[in-house]
Length: 123
Image 1 (cartoon, rainbow, N blue to C red):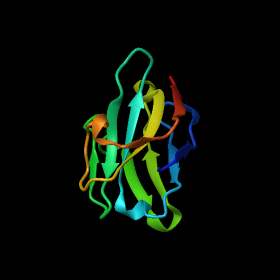
Image 2 (cartoon, rainbow, N blue to C red):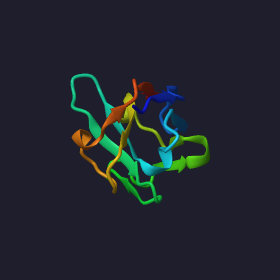
Image 3 (cartoon, rainbow, N blue to C red):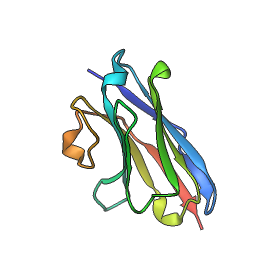
Image 4 (cartoon, rainbow, N blue to C red):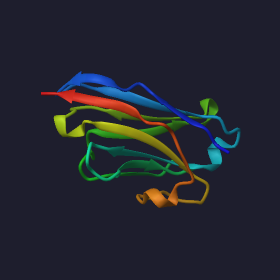
């Protein structure tokens, strides 16, 4: 059982930056592909970014060039650096882990989820 704990969310003005983190309990963290998803009120959970165990990444078109996913296997942590934030980026951001190889944009491919962290971007 992998436990994921997100942190770093908060309130930021449009155009600002924020970094959210996700710490995993699993000693074999490096074997998992990780993803970030977000969910705004009344909307579905959307893919944001993913990173494989080997460091290959994928970013949603809506965040490409603004957000960057990275991981530090020594710290069992995955990060999402967010820049040039827009009000439409406001959502609860969830970290997820999948034990199978490769990145995925599909929530159902992920085995474990964190509790989420709120990111609010004011205009």
